[in-house]
Length: 444
Ligand code: EPU
Image (cartoon, rainbow, N blue to C red):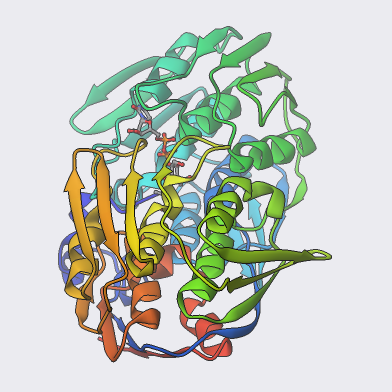
């Protein structure tokens, strides 16, 4: 989920105080680089799992309890959206309770428009109310972010959908199970799969999604929906079969750990010559990342449920192409590029999921990295000395890459606009500090 393009507006233009400083502050991080990170870090619940799960609570009038909920601005934002639809939403530590006792099919448009991830309320609203009215999410810095596949799937289930004045207006007096192929130009769609699955659980008959996204976040949503009484089989594979049921009930669920956060800490250990023990991650969700990092000379060991990462004697450049799961995740592309910038030799990093997810390239250049963009690929001439500079984050993962580069660079790096980071990394500054990073938050 990403802020749509309008999010770069000065915060005081946002009405109602919902986008208050807490969400869209202009804080920055000041990093003194060159300190190896050592110690233990605990991985939080996955942002991209919890957002569609929160949306799925709309499918029942009964209370749902979600555990291991990360404290992120995107999560708070989704909480506000659910409230605007009529839900009772309560955060207590990392436990979230939502009850969608009586809800309406249209929420606060202003809120919904501002978070790309909010598109995942469309499927659950259609399932429960047979109608939904949401604002069309905008494009964002990483690409155009179309929703054609979401609409194709929901239409196949019988929804009538109109796009009108920036809104998606969907109605489905009946939802009927069907076969739907969800593969697009760049492969399957994660939130599209989540939406169709969430609508189909309450459809009549059997829905088969072909070319479904296989991301662990999709499986986690299916686990939650099944706990609510849905009948979903095959989630995690390209063919998902959903047998519609009459109603869903409340459920309890613990969100999977954030594989992207874990990957970011693996890379941090390598980039700073440190040694980090990562707790609470699921290594089996990280196979592509671990494989690439090992190929690059990073030592990653498993000790029980923990993973220990440190740099080996020598780093070697590797080529990376982002792909749908179980390939190398686009959400780790920027962080991997930061590592390659430090690695002597040439590496080619190709982005196949989003067409313009290279916002970090120019900023890494300010720190001294030598990276050229050629079509969908970045050519990294690694091994140049990085030295601190003020940089500006353009999106969540670009921000993470800049923080990593700043930790490895000589001197001070100020990463501006870290509200991006607060959307997706729980307590990032505290976690890095605990590992010995010299990092402080400068308030606007
Ligand atoms: N696409 C279409 N049509 C659609 C939907 C998607 O052509 O209707 C295309 C997209 O333009 C893209 C590709 O399909 O080229 C894959 O996009 P997908 O729909 O899978 O992305 P998403 O579901 O909108 C989620 C994550 C992203 C993550 C991508 C890919 C959430 C909230 N967001 O987005 O996370 O990059 O899957 O794995 O789950 C992030 O966390 O930083 C982030 C951007």
